[in-house]
Image: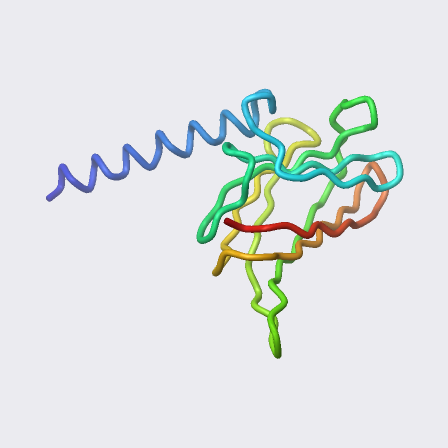
Length: 138
């Protein structure tokens, strides 16, 4: 039993290290999910397969100048919801800074597949702003 727990923890740590390397490393290994422009910034959602998937999902949010250079925007907050007839389903998304300024690691929990709306807001060295994404969760 102890060996199974240790092996499970080891596998979890390896998976986390691989995703952390993807977040902190070059974004070319990730695929673009969606891009929205706000003033002189592009806000780009990236994931391993170029989609967001139902359930727990790790992805990356990048803030880029129009020339593609990453920009540190300071504090980033998000909200996600899925409008449905007569109600709205809320999802959760947590955003943390990565080792690379302008690149943020996000962990979402999307309860259903379908059309989701996500709002991303920032406040810091690049000023303050917000954008809305609308897209499909697989």
